[in-house]
Structure formats: structure tokens, C-alpha cells
Image (cartoon, rainbow, N blue to C red):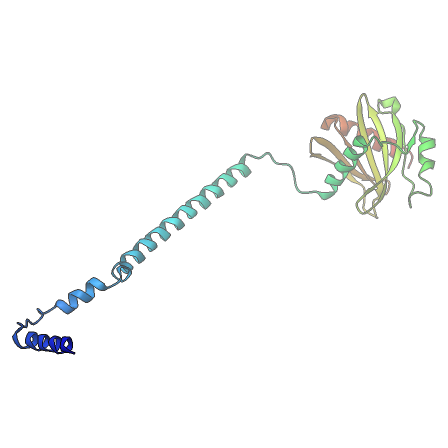
Length: 226
């Protein structure tokens, strides 16, 4: 009890005799400023730096896009022309390559046109013209069935030295006879024409001039039997 009374006496003495000092003006504001979170002080500079970094990133992306576009244009400019798109020409080349890869050149192997032509009877809804050109250096070696232009077609197979020539034949659906069209796809040459109510597509690794000479011989031979 005595200790409690002593503490009260000491407190009263301090209040009565202690010197009081008023806080200087602005102290409260300085303390509050010192206690403010750093993010509040640096928010504006950070936003400015972020905007600058974002602008720089977009500038780099824009430059990369322009460079890519220029490279693409340069590649197109130096690429050799491959001719207009022709899906049927691609099918013809695919049929030719397929016959060589699977060793399936002929369903009927014969140099006799009178054996090859009848073989197609009952297998197609048309009778393909078959001519042996052995006297011209292009012997017939056989024929087979194939599938082009969304339908079954006849494939006649000829030789020129060690080169194989596939001639795909199917009805021309009323189209008039026309001149020969020469194409090149994937390293193979193609000659296409219409005659005698049929479409002919000859394809080989012969050079373009040799294949065209063959096509002219075949067309002339077919014309003589009209």
C-alpha cells in the first residue's frame, strides 16, 4: 500500500515541476511523410518507366515484323516460277511416281495393243485408244487401271530407252480437241491434250522436248484410226 502511495506522490511532483515544450511547427507533417510507404513516393516515376519500356518493346516487335516481311518478299522474288496452280497436274505426277515406287506399272503386261486394249473391257466405262509406237522408238509395255480427276482412268505405259512414260486416258466429257499443253512438276514433264473425245496426260522424266515429240507421235497415230 505504501509503494502505491509513493508512486502517486512521484507522479504528482513530475507534473508540478517538469518543463513543458511545444512541438515545433511542421513536425507532424514531416513524421507522416517519413512514415509514408515508398510505393506512394515512387508510383509516378515507376509508371513513366513502365510506359517507356512498353514503347521500346512494341518498337522491337514492329522492327522484327518489318524484317520478316522483307525476307519473305525477297524469297518470293528469287523463287523460280512453277507455273499456275493445277491440282490435276499434281495428281498425274503422283500417279506416275506411285507406279514406279510400288513396282506396279502394269496390270496387263504386253507389247501387243490388241492384248492391252481388250483387257480394259468391263473394267472401265469407256474404251481407251491403245497404239504401239515401237517403230518410232516408244514401245508399249502394258497398261493398268488408275484413279484421277475423281474417276477410274486407263494408264498406258511406254518406254523410251530407260525412261518410263505413263499416259493417262479418260473421256473428255464433250470438250473439243485442243493444242498440247506442256507443264513441269516436281522434276517431271507433262504434256496434256484432247483428241478423239478423250483427254490424254503423258508424264515422264524425259526432257520436255522429247516428251512432246512422243506426244505428237501418239496423237498422230490415234488420228489415223479416227
